[in-house]
Image 1 (tube, rainbow, N blue to C red):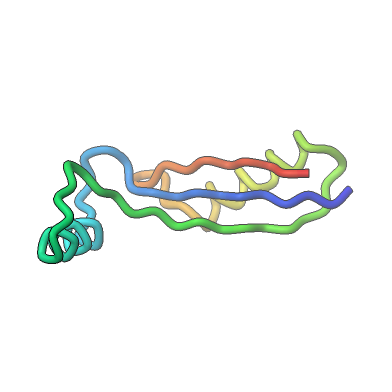
Image 2: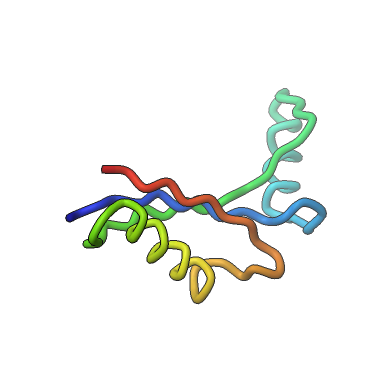
Length: 81
């Protein structure tokens, strides 16, 4: 079966996020005060798998082996039909 997975990868709590800090500063400069801001990357992956659970497992392997650095990143996988 064909599946589409949405993967969101962001920095773990406590990791420095200079891109977020720059964006937050830029927003403040144009009048938008924020209490917090973080950045994340979103990947949309189309793949073939036996079922939804297999698709989830494959994408989690992709995250562990390439897409995310488990030392500094957290990730969420959502498998769509």
